[in-house]
Image (cartoon, rainbow, N blue to C red; front, side, top):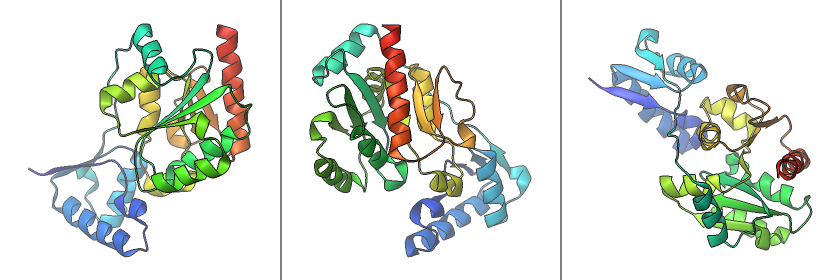
Length: 239
C-alpha cells in the first residue's frame, strides 16, 4: 500500500499562480489520488486536500505533529551560550527554522532596533532562499553585533541552542499559514524544550498557555518588541 504524509500545502508554498505552484499542484494531486491512505497534520489541511484533489474523505486522516523531548542540562546550556560569546546576563532570543520571507524573520530584526541596545541577542538558526536578503537587511539596520547567524544545525544542535535561549519565536505571516493549512512545528519544539514561545496569533496555536508563552495579535515589530520586553522583565524577576 501507498501511504502519503502531508505537512503543508505545496502549491501555497510555491505560489499558487506561478509555474512552480501549478507543477506542485499537479504532482501533489497525482501522488495523493494514487495513495491508499493520506495523513494530514491539521483538519484544515485535510479538508483542503479532499476538496482540491477529490480524495475520498475516509482515506484522509488527521495525524497531528509531535516532537522529541530533548535532554539538556544547565551546564550544557551555559556552555552553549558561552561558546557563542553570549554573556549570562544577556536576554537571548531564538529563531530556528527555514529562512523564507513568510517565516517573518525580518520582523524580528526590525524588533531589535526598537529594544535597548546591549541587553538582547538574536540567534537565527537555519538556511533558506531569503538568507542573503535577510543578512543584507541586518547590515542596513546596523544590528550585526546583536544577531548571530548559526547556519544549518543538526537536530541535537538545535535542541542545545534552543535550550540556551530565554524565549523562542515563531513570527509567521498569518496569511501564509492560513493558505498553507499546516501546523507550525516550532511551537511544539519550544514547549518540549520548556522555553517560552512568542508566536504570531494563530488558531492552530491556541493550546499555548499564558505561562508557556504569548500569542501576539499583531504582526508589527512594535508589538513584538513590547512582548519581548515583558518576557525579559519576567526573566529578571525570576532571577
